[in-house]
Length: 212
Image (cartoon, rainbow, N blue to C red; front, side, top):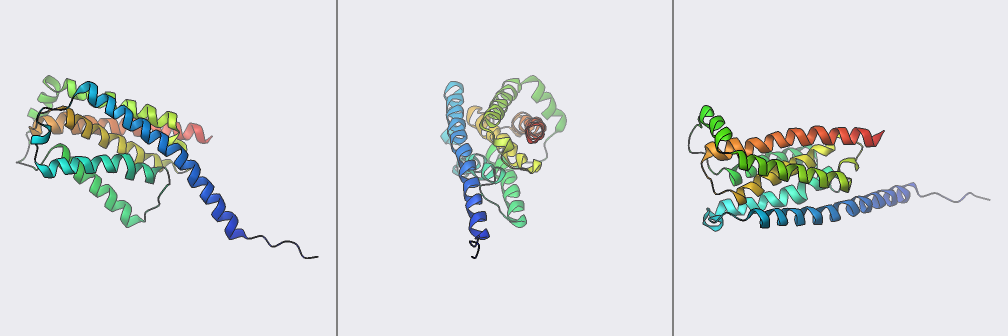
């Protein structure tokens, strides 16, 4: 009597489909909670009064940043999509460019680093605190949703933490009416860069502990 034939391809396909469903089960509630948290922070912090007086292209880019940080980057980090090397480089490059243009605007000259640092210390505390509060709050959501342990590769968490940093830039841009690059670069982007480092280090630590 012949043994039943095992369809290995069907088994592998089925396992991958189950894994994707499991990841979506983590992703969708986390996305909903994140959107709710950002909406609450925006309501409590308020929109800048000149929100819709910004250049149209900059508002469009700000919405594009939300799409990237809430959907595109987390989807890659959680393993819902697997872009090739060239596509990953393009996603990273686009994320950096759109975030800078959306949060800072077009460059008007070479900024004075001394002025930037002094401004960040003297006038930017509120914005820095806003960025840190938003970033650490999103880190907490990522932790409780299991976003940092969905894939075996440790580097995968960096996609999620990059999304967190981008979200903080967009959030503070919609809150703070300052447009001077000495302020936006030093306090908005600078604080987000620090958040990226902190959240990445903590996420990698969480990933390592959960994978044991």
